[in-house]
Each structure stands twice: as structure tokens, then as C-alpha cells.
Image 1 (cartoon, rainbow, N blue to C red):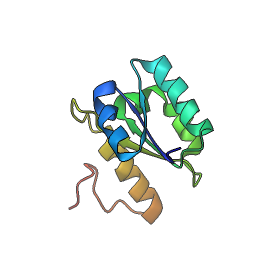
Image 2 (cartoon, rainbow, N blue to C red):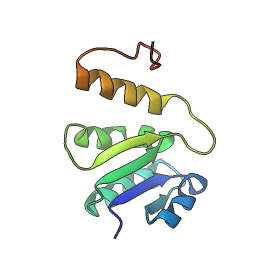
Image 3 (cartoon, rainbow, N blue to C red):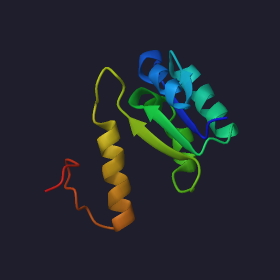
Length: 109
């Protein structure tokens, strides 16, 4: 079993199966929440989620934010980014360092 999972729309996750990543294609918020729980219960160490899945599972993801495993990472879907992934990375870097070195936009100054 893969220790890495990717949850998102079918077009975003399908190609990752070739790399041995467990793909969880979903079609809506309820499926996203169920797939996230399945990935956690399946002991996946790294869970990639698209921005849509992150929005649907924000409360579930928050439970694991301060734990070492699983690591949850937000990625844009194939349709493009809405900026959620950059915002999450910006917040994580600021929290880890204790300072906002990236600036409010999330871009390096």
C-alpha cells in the first residue's frame, strides 16, 4: 500500500497512480470528506489534497495540522490555482519561523 495519497477531482489525481500514489477521485464535498477519512485510516503518511478538497475538509485537516503524521499538503487542481495552496504554505512558513519573511502575498520580497 502506498504511504502517499492524493484526493481531488478525477483529472487532477488520475496520473499520480503511475507513481504508486493512492488516488482518491472525488466528485463533491461529501466524497471528499469520506476519502480524507479513508486516507487517514489507511495510515497514509502524506496526503495531498486539491484546493476544493481542502475547502470541503478544512475541519478534518485542522485536526492533523500540529501532528507529524499525516502531513497534509494543498495543491492546485488541473483547472488552476485559487491561491489557497500558496496561502497555506505562507502560513506554515510564518508559523515555523515565527516571522513573516514572505510578505502578505506569499511571495518572497
